[in-house]
Image (cartoon, rainbow, N blue to C red):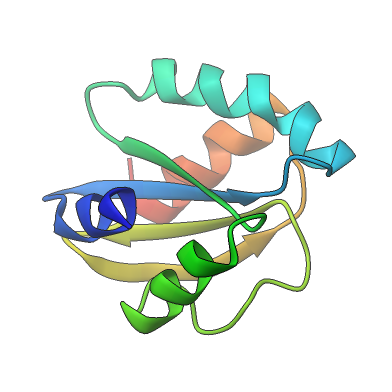
Length: 108
């Protein structure tokens, strides 16, 4: 719950990866997500939310990070100053697409 609250309290751009430990595409996205976090380290905060933990997913819904339990993963939720900017981007991406997505969402 603390990470969810921290993500919502951040001033500035935030991206939250929604994933599961058993999800193949999520595992492939791990390195790409980490590379994007390095690339944008001075401009964007990165968080992760595992759907394996039902309590955390419900907390994310209750706090307004998610509208409902994700049906498809990996998913990415973007926020700016605590407000959801882009509800959800669903699906894995290569590193170039991930960087382009973040640039487009936040207008970099």
